[in-house]
Image (cartoon, rainbow, N blue to C red; front, side):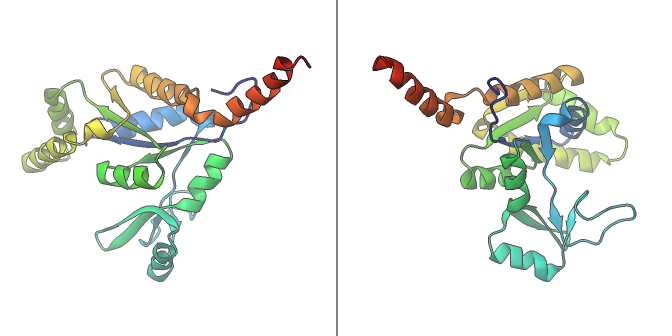
Length: 216
């Protein structure tokens, strides 16, 4: 955390979880309660804007040529082609928010998390999960929008994703929403106190104390 208002660079946070774990709900509540600390990453996409969407708010809307130029110039943290359209995370926007002291949250799946961790090794990886598998199944079934086959497919996918949970830094259990939100916020804020993230301050205080060791 900040020491007497000392400005710190923001932390890049990847937030992942099983489908049905409630990560979207947790993220929305986190922004409602603690939005001053965070910036949600805005993706670039080649799909057409839907009614009411604005460039730079929901997405950065790009042509296919513009997006592929961004890929060529390595201007994206990560990207994927989904149902005929590109989606990706612009590096410039992320860096701008980090430099402003905001913690930037990317809500993506495990494969994307691996790519970002490789590019930004000090990224904080958080994984949200239900208390148990039965709860996950109940939440997926309780949506009422998915067939039994779709629920089964999502559970099978969850099993695959579970094989990579050990790669994350922290696991947060979403049993009670408000408690989960508080745990996510506390985990990210406490990360700022890590010695490895405060090398500039440590170097500065050492230099300042050096004067006293010499009797100044």
